[in-house]
Image (cartoon, rainbow, N blue to C red; front, side, top):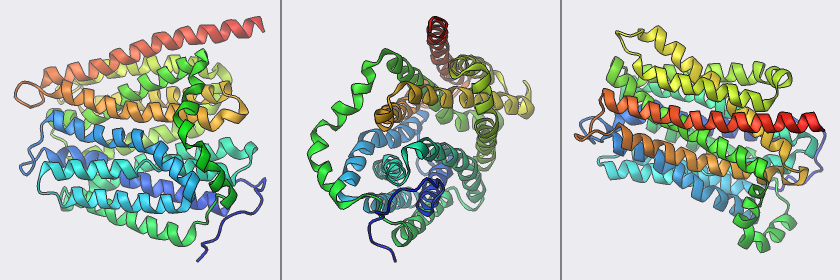
Length: 420
């Protein structure tokens, strides 16, 4: 077992053993997260818990709210005590959260499990710091790009696994997620070497007081502020859709957790194809700023039209086309915004700038489901056609604002290029 520090000089070679291990760790962690997505609404709306749409929205929101608060805290602890122990204990904490949900007998236990999983699920910043430790500056962007791949792949396999496991009981996906996360933690403990040097841990002790102040200094750049605002609106709108989708398909089509798992996997597959094979070429041809404009406009239309779809209005083929546009719009807009932010930030502030965007995204993932929970809930604590329309149309309205601001930003970029 290797418990020593990984202090050897950083090599130019990118895909080293520590990079491979941390990628697998994050990938498995996100599979556990993805498993919950199609199962949670069906788990709590049943006879045992009888949760309202509002309570379901709060369950989704509570996880991301805890991530928003605790991600920088876990990142700070990893600066002080090392990446490896924080990753290990955070994975064990996530497993405890999943177990609480799987064995819950009251709704408060489900909320408690989601809160615990959210607190310990803020370990992404620690994993990003690990990659920064073991990569050269030239390979830093590639390393951070692995997170996009891990998210995409986790979003494919997680919901599909969760949907399939729900055949044997709607609580089974949560128990499997707990087992998977525990195995991941044990493997990490025995295999992953520490990346942070002892002297770097000591120097981090004096910087804790100014962590948030330093983080938000990046927002002083007006261009970066606009991009962060656009990213926040995009993630909020997309999170509204994510929290709404399973209840919408249950109400309109009668789809269960398994069917929704396949639908979410379909979205993930399209996202991986778009971001892995087409995005780079489109960005070179048209520029990232215009991809944000086009992607936002696609989402405006998709979020507006999809609530019309039902068994008598297009059926499953129309639904598949509609959610394909969900994936297309997001796959154009999201990586384009992070790419633009990375180009605007200085070389010395890449991590800080992208950290601001990810903090905003975590907050958006808390606000979006909360909005969905309020809008989906009618006077009887149920979902109906009217609440579906107003929820999706709110997401569409947010994307319309995103489109207009993105169009303004793209014109500014084009004007500056013409003057340079």
